[in-house]
Length: 177
Image (cartoon, rainbow, N blue to C red; front, side, top):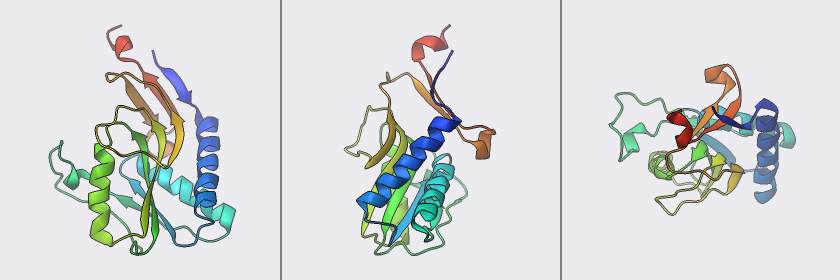
């Protein structure tokens, strides 16, 4: 049994709020670019970029970053699905992931992002912050903070991959049931 943290409507409202927060903190969309961490950070990033584009009336570019080659805890991938078809040097990069946990994925993403130039700054936006950091990395923008145990699982489903938008918490104690 899982607990629903965000349904499709909640996710839509949360991303709308985050888009407004990002634009407010950066005084608009000028020099903003969005980069989503593959896999589920990418659709979240596309939605944030689209919402900011709608709000500001100016296009906010969005790319995707494959961090597998930069992970220190998983085997390297044969392929690289990264697509960043715009300049990052001198830009404010909004790095997007669906969940932050230990922060190892974000560390890998920062390493991967630097291949494309030197951003003016990098700001982190996450849909869910579940705590338990192993590295001193905190999100600038967070959709929802959730108190979890280390053995719990956050399951993020996005329409682009799963046919639905939903965020669930599966407690470690529920797995044995």
